[in-house]
Image 1: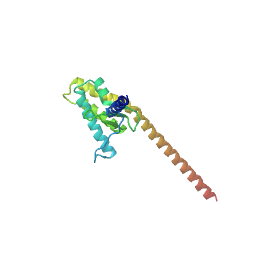
Image 2: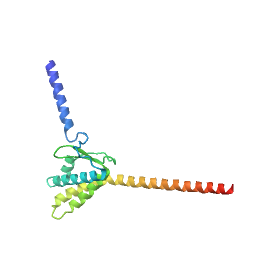
Image 3: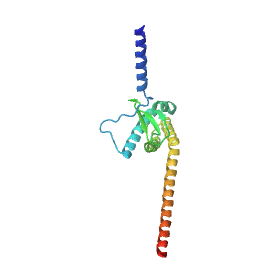
Image 4: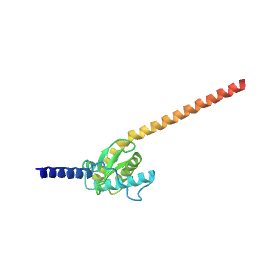
Length: 174
């Protein structure tokens, strides 16, 4: 009886381990040695790799099927807009806002490439449209945040100038 319980525990543990190692497990991406890149270069490399993967998958599948297999998650945050599952290694790779915007542009250009079959181009374009829906609110929020920061700086600068003028006038009156 104890042996049966141990077998069940072992099977459950092994099943759980296998489930965690699958594509939709939320394991952080593992960087290979020497793979640490600066932000802009890293975004460009990630976007180029994802564009190639999506284009390759779209040669064999429709958007509906490909998106389910490739998009592992969508947080909708600037830090991680979405996560893409590598179809070869099944590694989940998070894409920040910059990389996602670059990817969207690459996909749009790729969809318009001469000689690309209509169904394949439509699949690629649907990925680009989907990523645009994810990034547009984030880009708009970043733009608004920048404007708010700029206006706050300008207001603070005007207040400081007024205070300086008032101090100068007080000094002149004394």
